[in-house]
Image (cartoon, rainbow, N blue to C red; front, side, top):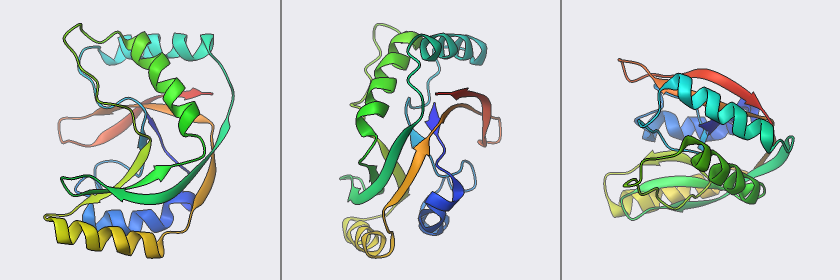
Length: 164
């Protein structure tokens, strides 16, 4: 489950992704609300997500991509600042609806848009500085969540769209 920000909001980020993100040619810039999961079929997920969103319908909300960070393993990202609380609530609702298996441990939810992965610490620091210096904050309206599925070639496709 992802949010695809509008193209104009992520145009500058896509230039960095083109060079640094191995997923650039597989999926457009996005904020993952629920990471890829395998415990439900596409049909089951679509039904459960649709029901959960209909029960908790809240409408569109603003989001702002601003502030660059990086993980210890070299992933550089842009944070969702405005809108992160709403995304966290949606994450919790959808995770409950999808009902992961009892032994599944979900990582803590952090609303970010991935920019890329650098091979080492100094390269990640450099990429983080470059992104911070060239990527202005981007504000957009979150109106739709997309259920995406990966095909046999490793490309991600939108299976269903859910209006908020």
